[in-house]
Image 1 (cartoon, rainbow, N blue to C red):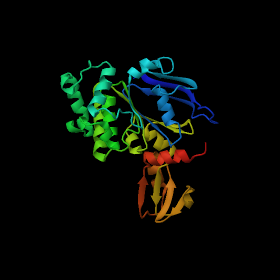
Image 2: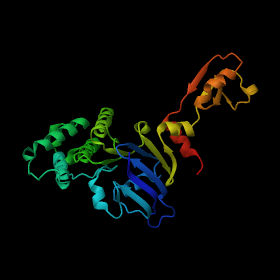
Image 3: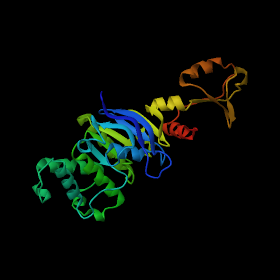
Image 4: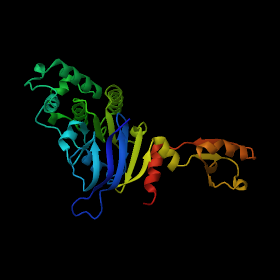
Length: 305
């Protein structure tokens, strides 16, 4: 697969800031893949995604989306994108459906019609499908957005971002405010979108379980890349697997520490069998622990810069 996003030595410093918000960040995202950008508040995630979606201009470096420079050719870049930002960007004076209709017309998908019933059947069918995915009813789609809750506004933004079938879908905390059923429905649908249309999904999230299935993960901290790879690579490289043993290990010279119920011993996943064979003392209990992505993520952030 070819890279649909290329970021090289990207830098962003805000006016009067003492440090760069984004400081020499480089990565690439393969076409049709699922990419996750993680990091704590202030790590540079939103700044990076804002540059890639052309709402911020970089201070240095280069970012390309679908072969187009985000700073030099922003209009072309925007045509490739679907975007769901943290804060809603809806017109509160329009109905939910009118927000989507205006978006579809601005993207040149359909000619303008003053009423929903006059819009082409393809638009109406696509809208019904997308609204159903996130749980918005036809009645709700006809209501003014000012009457919507925060969760309903989030659902509507998801519908609007997908109506033009973007090549790259940027999701900045997309499921904030969604109930569990809507979150599950959204991710199931995004899986279908990727399979059918080759849409690339670029995610930032605080729900780390949403990044577990990402093809590639990039972790930022203080504006820099501190880890990158698959979830398994990050977990395997940066958080050791542990084996709990109920017998002494001092004679073997293995690093360990005493905890309630036994000893905790760090060991690579491939070395578990060899360790068990080397232990002569009969074992009362053996428990292996494989770290979660969240554990790896937290350990990475706690390491000194």
